[in-house]
Length: 241
Image (cartoon, helix red, strand yellow):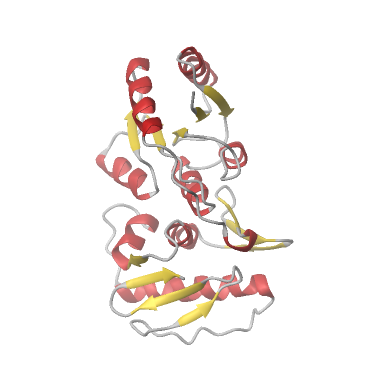
């Protein structure tokens, strides 16, 4: 049977989920914080479906999902949460979620949804670039012994780009992934955030004085410390090559 990772901070809900999923024959990995979820459900772990609470004690489950996606974990994610507003659902999908179930929930529905996600199969994960590590609790990016702090917006932008290597990510998709639902963000603001993010990433190579000469709308390529190129696609968005 498939392996299901469950991250839920409420011990009673976690126990009920474990009993139901275990009774259905699934192998379980259990976590109660975002940090544990990143460690237990990462791309090196054999997990077929992830059930992830959004309201975790140390982080937002959507940031945890983005960190997992950026690290190469493509197992489908089912969000469980009491936040059932349209904005919450939209931001959950933009964070990389595949399904969304509000609390309180029926265990029969959880089993049906997990079963449907498990039948999709696990996509082949992409290789995480040069050991780049994203921490969704502290909003940091690290490689080896070097670590930099980024803003929550920069973190979500980087995670969105890392989750789609080689693809062009439109500016509007970056806005949807990194800003609150419904936010109106100018294109030059997105470009400015990307330039700042490039400069911060260069510090992981000890190149703190590097200056990003790319202008909004220009075709520009800059090597990141991971060996990837953050490429500006004229009039469209950005891509990691």
